[in-house]
Image (cartoon, rainbow, N blue to C red):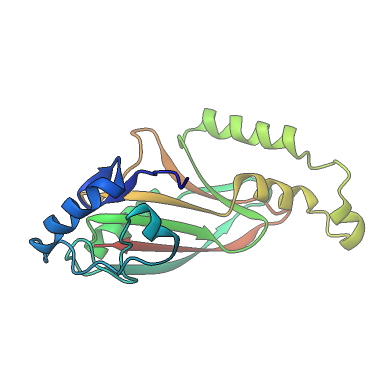
Length: 202
Protein backbone atom coordinates (compact mmCIF):
# COMPACT_ATOMS: atom_id res chain seq x y z
CA UNK A 1 0.00 0.00 0.00
CA UNK A 2 1.30 3.45 -0.93
CA UNK A 3 1.50 5.67 2.18
CA UNK A 4 -0.65 8.80 2.31
CA UNK A 5 1.66 11.74 2.91
CA UNK A 6 0.71 15.33 3.75
CA UNK A 7 1.24 17.81 0.93
CA UNK A 8 2.22 21.47 1.27
CA UNK A 9 0.31 23.69 -1.15
CA UNK A 10 -0.07 27.48 -1.44
CA UNK A 11 -3.30 27.06 0.52
CA UNK A 12 -1.67 25.12 3.34
CA UNK A 13 -1.18 21.46 4.28
CA UNK A 14 -3.44 18.78 2.83
CA UNK A 15 -3.66 15.97 5.38
CA UNK A 16 -5.18 13.60 2.82
CA UNK A 17 -3.96 14.63 -0.64
CA UNK A 18 -5.93 11.90 -2.43
CA UNK A 19 -9.21 13.20 -1.02
CA UNK A 20 -8.38 16.90 -0.92
CA UNK A 21 -6.55 17.46 -4.22
CA UNK A 22 -9.73 17.70 -6.29
CA UNK A 23 -11.08 20.46 -4.05
CA UNK A 24 -7.69 22.20 -4.12
CA UNK A 25 -7.60 22.05 -7.94
CA UNK A 26 -11.05 23.64 -8.09
CA UNK A 27 -9.89 26.49 -5.86
CA UNK A 28 -6.78 26.99 -8.01
CA UNK A 29 -8.88 27.16 -11.18
CA UNK A 30 -10.59 30.25 -9.80
CA UNK A 31 -7.38 31.86 -8.52
CA UNK A 32 -5.10 32.16 -11.61
CA UNK A 33 -3.23 35.09 -10.09
CA UNK A 34 -2.12 32.86 -7.20
CA UNK A 35 -1.17 29.79 -9.21
CA UNK A 36 -0.80 29.65 -12.96
CA UNK A 37 -0.96 25.93 -13.62
CA UNK A 38 -0.68 22.41 -12.28
CA UNK A 39 1.28 19.73 -14.06
CA UNK A 40 -0.53 16.61 -15.20
CA UNK A 41 -0.51 13.63 -12.87
CA UNK A 42 2.51 11.45 -13.60
CA UNK A 43 4.89 8.90 -12.11
CA UNK A 44 4.74 7.82 -8.47
CA UNK A 45 2.94 10.99 -7.41
CA UNK A 46 -0.15 10.00 -9.38
CA UNK A 47 -0.72 7.05 -7.06
CA UNK A 48 -1.11 9.58 -4.23
CA UNK A 49 -3.49 11.75 -6.21
CA UNK A 50 -0.95 14.60 -6.17
CA UNK A 51 -0.64 16.96 -9.11
CA UNK A 52 2.93 18.33 -8.88
CA UNK A 53 3.64 21.93 -9.81
CA UNK A 54 5.11 22.45 -13.25
CA UNK A 55 8.78 23.42 -13.25
CA UNK A 56 9.09 27.17 -12.83
CA UNK A 57 5.49 27.64 -11.71
CA UNK A 58 4.96 31.00 -10.03
CA UNK A 59 2.83 30.31 -6.95
CA UNK A 60 2.71 33.87 -5.70
CA UNK A 61 2.20 36.00 -8.77
CA UNK A 62 5.30 38.01 -7.83
CA UNK A 63 8.43 38.46 -9.93
CA UNK A 64 11.51 36.79 -8.39
CA UNK A 65 14.32 39.20 -7.52
CA UNK A 66 18.02 38.67 -6.88
CA UNK A 67 20.69 40.97 -5.44
CA UNK A 68 24.36 40.06 -4.99
CA UNK A 69 27.49 41.78 -3.75
CA UNK A 70 31.12 40.97 -2.91
CA UNK A 71 33.34 42.38 -0.19
CA UNK A 72 36.99 41.95 0.78
CA UNK A 73 38.01 42.29 4.42
CA UNK A 74 41.51 42.18 5.88
CA UNK A 75 41.26 39.96 8.97
CA UNK A 76 43.93 38.94 11.52
CA UNK A 77 45.26 35.39 11.88
CA UNK A 78 43.61 32.49 13.78
CA UNK A 79 40.51 34.31 15.03
CA UNK A 80 40.09 37.40 12.90
CA UNK A 81 36.40 38.22 13.23
CA UNK A 82 34.10 40.92 11.85
CA UNK A 83 30.44 41.77 12.39
CA UNK A 84 28.97 41.48 8.90
CA UNK A 85 25.38 42.29 9.87
CA UNK A 86 25.36 45.97 8.77
CA UNK A 87 26.57 45.11 5.26
CA UNK A 88 23.98 42.35 4.92
CA UNK A 89 21.17 44.57 6.19
CA UNK A 90 22.15 47.23 3.65
CA UNK A 91 22.04 44.70 0.81
CA UNK A 92 18.60 43.44 1.85
CA UNK A 93 17.23 46.98 2.11
CA UNK A 94 18.68 48.06 -1.24
CA UNK A 95 17.42 44.90 -2.97
CA UNK A 96 13.77 45.76 -2.30
CA UNK A 97 13.11 42.10 -1.47
CA UNK A 98 10.50 41.68 1.25
CA UNK A 99 10.29 37.87 1.42
CA UNK A 100 13.12 35.46 0.71
CA UNK A 101 16.55 34.35 1.85
CA UNK A 102 19.90 36.07 2.39
CA UNK A 103 22.83 33.72 1.82
CA UNK A 104 26.33 34.64 2.99
CA UNK A 105 29.44 32.72 1.97
CA UNK A 106 33.12 33.21 2.74
CA UNK A 107 35.32 31.96 -0.10
CA UNK A 108 38.00 29.51 1.02
CA UNK A 109 38.55 26.55 3.33
CA UNK A 110 40.19 28.34 6.27
CA UNK A 111 37.44 30.83 7.10
CA UNK A 112 33.89 30.65 8.40
CA UNK A 113 30.51 32.36 8.62
CA UNK A 114 28.24 31.96 11.64
CA UNK A 115 25.97 33.89 13.99
CA UNK A 116 26.71 34.86 17.58
CA UNK A 117 26.14 37.72 19.98
CA UNK A 118 28.93 40.08 18.94
CA UNK A 119 30.30 40.98 22.35
CA UNK A 120 33.68 40.27 23.92
CA UNK A 121 32.52 37.56 26.31
CA UNK A 122 30.71 35.45 23.72
CA UNK A 123 33.54 35.90 21.23
CA UNK A 124 36.12 34.74 23.78
CA UNK A 125 33.94 31.74 24.59
CA UNK A 126 33.85 30.82 20.90
CA UNK A 127 37.60 31.14 20.59
CA UNK A 128 38.16 28.93 23.66
CA UNK A 129 35.75 26.33 22.26
CA UNK A 130 37.64 26.26 18.96
CA UNK A 131 40.96 25.92 20.81
CA UNK A 132 39.57 22.88 22.63
CA UNK A 133 38.08 21.22 19.55
CA UNK A 134 40.98 21.87 17.17
CA UNK A 135 44.09 23.04 19.09
CA UNK A 136 46.68 24.98 17.11
CA UNK A 137 49.57 22.76 18.28
CA UNK A 138 47.90 19.39 17.76
CA UNK A 139 49.22 16.91 15.19
CA UNK A 140 47.46 17.22 11.85
CA UNK A 141 47.95 14.98 8.82
CA UNK A 142 47.45 18.05 6.66
CA UNK A 143 50.51 19.71 8.21
CA UNK A 144 52.58 16.54 7.76
CA UNK A 145 51.71 16.39 4.09
CA UNK A 146 51.93 20.05 3.14
CA UNK A 147 54.00 21.66 5.90
CA UNK A 148 51.91 24.83 6.01
CA UNK A 149 50.92 24.57 9.67
CA UNK A 150 47.25 25.41 9.19
CA UNK A 151 45.65 22.01 9.70
CA UNK A 152 43.74 23.45 12.65
CA UNK A 153 42.36 26.18 10.39
CA UNK A 154 40.81 23.70 7.97
CA UNK A 155 39.26 21.68 10.78
CA UNK A 156 37.80 24.78 12.47
CA UNK A 157 36.39 25.98 9.15
CA UNK A 158 34.76 22.61 8.52
CA UNK A 159 33.18 22.66 11.99
CA UNK A 160 31.76 26.19 11.71
CA UNK A 161 31.01 26.03 7.94
CA UNK A 162 31.62 28.69 5.31
CA UNK A 163 28.06 29.81 4.54
CA UNK A 164 24.70 30.43 6.18
CA UNK A 165 21.19 31.41 5.04
CA UNK A 166 19.01 33.87 6.94
CA UNK A 167 15.28 34.30 6.17
CA UNK A 168 14.04 37.71 5.03
CA UNK A 169 10.53 38.58 6.22
CA UNK A 170 8.85 41.95 5.62
CA UNK A 171 12.13 43.24 4.21
CA UNK A 172 14.13 42.47 7.35
CA UNK A 173 16.65 39.80 8.31
CA UNK A 174 15.13 37.39 10.79
CA UNK A 175 17.83 37.63 13.47
CA UNK A 176 17.40 37.71 17.21
CA UNK A 177 17.99 40.88 19.20
CA UNK A 178 21.45 39.72 20.25
CA UNK A 179 22.25 37.70 17.13
CA UNK A 180 24.74 39.00 14.57
CA UNK A 181 26.18 37.49 11.39
CA UNK A 182 29.97 37.25 11.63
CA UNK A 183 32.76 36.29 9.24
CA UNK A 184 36.01 34.80 10.48
CA UNK A 185 39.54 34.24 9.23
CA UNK A 186 40.83 31.07 10.88
CA UNK A 187 44.06 30.74 8.91
CA UNK A 188 47.44 30.91 10.61
CA UNK A 189 48.19 34.22 8.90
CA UNK A 190 46.32 37.43 8.26
CA UNK A 191 44.23 37.20 5.10
CA UNK A 192 42.15 39.28 2.74
CA UNK A 193 38.90 37.30 2.90
CA UNK A 194 36.32 37.48 0.13
CA UNK A 195 32.68 37.42 1.25
CA UNK A 196 29.77 36.98 -1.15
CA UNK A 197 26.14 37.65 -0.21
CA UNK A 198 23.09 36.88 -2.32
CA UNK A 199 19.51 37.87 -1.52
CA UNK A 200 16.76 36.05 -3.42
CA UNK A 201 13.02 36.43 -3.11
CA UNK A 202 10.23 38.75 -4.15
